[in-house]
Length: 233
Image (cartoon, rainbow, N blue to C red; front, side, top):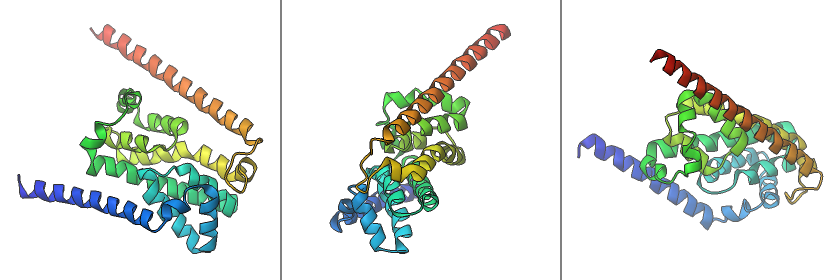
């Protein structure tokens, strides 16, 4: 094993150890309990005053890629701050978490992560090769920010900046909606209010429509490529 390979392996092991230590520290100091639900998270951040902004982004960035649901953070944000602030902080936190999840999968644990990507995501490999930006946008609109999607993009061939900007576009509608209508969709405990169901239903329908249009576009494009290839032969 060359010195460069050994150094790279040691660096990767160091990053993994740092992640594990960070998560262990978060558990030891009760941070997981504080972000267990939006109400508790909101109370914790309010108690920190202006430092709550930084605490929100750091907690979101570090914890979401490794298991804590991002919805806890974006639901808590409009319970604390005006919708403009909630949207800005939610977007920053979501993008930072996505970059961490993407980078960890690509640069640190690619082989381990790649073996655990579900088949339902692997079917999008061809779409990413043909039209990476559009596919990233659609998948973020439909699936949003599960950790496995961060990892899938990380082990795929999509470029970093394509993933970054595609994710930004895909996240924007939902984050804007939740931030602006947060007080109408969720109560002080972060539970969904009855009036939120029509909003969520509309969002689901819109996502399914976008997915259907994307699939139709991909089928049409594949058929066109096939006809072109046959004419070429």
